[in-house]
Image (tube, rainbow over all chains, first blue to last red; front, side, top):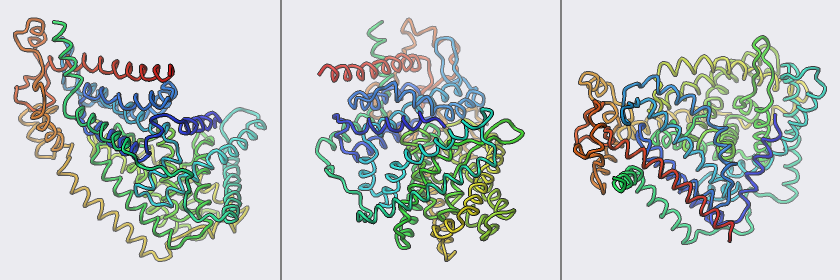
Length: 268
Length: 352
């Protein structure tokens, strides 16, 4: 297990703590907008390629206004890509009917839908990551709770997030201990694995017990208290409406084709 | 087994979100009534534990590959189905938020596939029935392997079903099924063994820590009501959504398309797409964009035995060379422009 993975999660949280125009938009507004974004992207027909491109404006704006380093998120998108690529890669084999002609080159429907899957993947994943990177876990959970998420689930999300690093560090220390003592660099034998994970489980349960006592001592009653409760402002409403209008426009008119047509008319 | 946003349709994603939301609300209510204060930190820390355990690999003898714990069944064994479902939901949510593992639209599907089956089917039906209160031995190992296999097979089947119903991937139903089920049989055996290894270790080392955490459904009737509810909701939602967005042609339509050789690209887009297309047709500023047949440059492209003769009235996406070139150029330029806008904003902010 790489410790690097955990540091990466921490970086995400650091990004979420920053202050920028996008960070200041209410979490609820950003969540709703991202939901609309994903639904409009996914409602296109499976062969649509060019009409998807204008949608890149949304994640790119979130990143640039929120000062999220694009290279960092791009790497994360790449890491997550294999599954979508693996399933999408079957399309060219099963759907060989030519669908589009570019010059004399006929492109089959399968390649077209494969390209479409890749674009959708890049769009939806980058938007979701950008949302988290410019909101932060605390604000996100508070926003989700106001949107009707059961409180116990919101608290659970925050707890999980808080102890991810602690238990993760404990686990990686244990694995490192085994690795340093092992003769060969290889995966754990099953017997060792059982007792190692069982031990980690026992330590985790003991930790939960300590946390519970500490919580009781401080009078925890299940509510998450935020120092400055975020309020919905007019700007948040404008954020949602503006982007919704853009998504609707890009959904109903193929902006890329219109634009390309204008360019080519100008050129001829 | 995490499904990505890019492979499911909004109708399927929405339906599974609704089902998952309903189950979560039920679980939350159940836990509230039987609330024990120490359950909250235990759920949080065990979620973190599952996360960590997923990163620790062990070697599978004789194969040269390695496996790891998935965790759904283990959580159900430790916490009981209701709390386990919520913990799995939170783990999947964090994976979607921070690791881009599965998407936001697909989160409902993922929670259902990986959470519902282990917690509400595999654990109560298989594990409890076979293991009873065994703390180790053949009973425990057999029960965990069986339960894990059942849970993962159902989950994998559900993945195939959802992918097929979405119609984004062109993978035929049968092929995908043949790919997924055998793989998940092996994964299930590994998962069951890993679960049994950890649970029997804890049972040996600290047997008292296993029993009291479980908020188990003491009346099996309540569990049955959850199952029935989900079944009903699925049927109702399936019915309600299918008229809205059947992205697959039904058998009849398909047969007609086969017989008449009608173009599939425009044909099988389903109701929602067709309706949107009609709306688009009405609202388009420049409907039917493309090259005019006589317009010099474009003639060769039209002439090269254009693959389909899309009639002018055909619904979008019309397949003709002019539109696709315009789309290609426009798409590329739009992409570049979007990037440039991003960089410009970025540069301005740095300058300020």
